[in-house]
Structures are given as C-alpha cells and as structure tokens.
Image 1: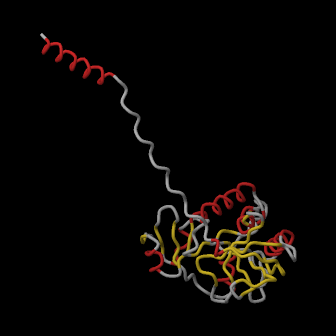
Image 2: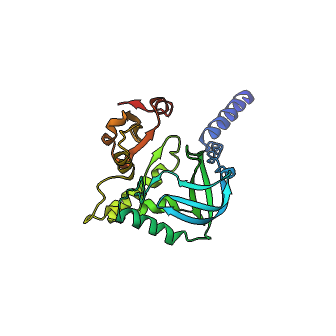
Image 3: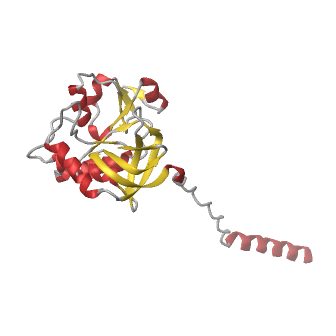
Length: 237
C-alpha cells in the first residue's frame, strides 16, 4: 500500500510540474550598435570665401589644403573655361554665399578619399550638425553627384533631390528648368565624351559610360572604371 501511495505522489508531482508555466526565455542580446563616425575625419575651420555653389576656400588649412570641393554634389557652373550656366550658376553661388559668409565656423568632414586630383579637399561641410551639401541639393542649387567610394549619404541626398523636384525649387522651377546638368555642361564645353561607368544604386547594375542616361538621376552613381563597379558589388547590365 505504501508503495502505491509513493507512486501516486510521484505521479501527482509530475502532473503538477507539467501544468505550470515554463520559465520565460532569456532576453535576447541587444542589437549591435552602428559604428560611430570616424571623428579623425572631422576638422573645425572657418570660411574664407565661396567660389561657387560647390567650392569654398577655408581660412585654416585642413590636411594641408584650404580648397574644398563639396563632396557628392554638383552645382551649376559660373566659370568653366570662360563659360557659365548663367542664372543657375549665379543663383547657386549666391545662395551658398548667403549661407556661408566669410568667417563662418564650419566642420569639415573629409571623405573616404581626402583629396581630388587637383589637391582640393573632398568634404562635407556642416554647421551645428546640419549638412550644407545636402541643403544645396534640397533647395535646388546642386544635384547629387556620387562617385565611388563616396556613397555614404546617398539616400539622404536622393531624398533631398526628390523634395527639390517636387517643390520646383531652384533649377527645378517648372517654368524654367535647367536643361543640362553641370557635369554634362563641362563635357560639352570641354569637348569630352562620358568617361565614368554609371550604376543604379538599388538594382546594383552598371552600364558603360556612354549609356549613363539609362540610369535615372535619382538612382545614379559613378565609377572611375569597370573594376571599381565590380568591386562595389555591381553587375554589368
């Protein structure tokens, strides 16, 4: 009898344990945080003067240079081989001059490649965390101009472009839209043919330089050569 009672007691405990709620699972680890920006690329300086809508001179040199080519944008020309894009270039320059008068404190954020072939700094300009390059695109005074490997801010600038077009700002004024992008103007004046491979940011397909117009402006990125396109994970269309 005692043996039977012990068996019933054990069975009861087993049933009781089976009816209790299971222990909650251990909390999942926090998702990894994004890598912080490379602060070694950020340098304080002051504006000496604005040259045009995408070029400024600094009072204090950064990495040995005071000339800055604002990264990943392209503004209408005011003086390329003695030629200009007229009112578009003047408006772009005037807008940047009003926003960056002489003596303005700026943060110069250098790109992955710090200088171009002319020794100019390739950089984003920021004031109190505001991206001035992006602002130029958003107000229709520049267009995105992404050349590998500087694709970091692509989606932000694409959004700025779409906003400028929607609002009809600057060069996207529906009553007087620009008929030639700045780099196209330089090619024509310089009697040059397209020399950069063009890629579609979303599809990751690329085309030969002559076919760059197959890629919509809001998706367009450029590569100096075919090897760079393939290195970036793009495939030939």
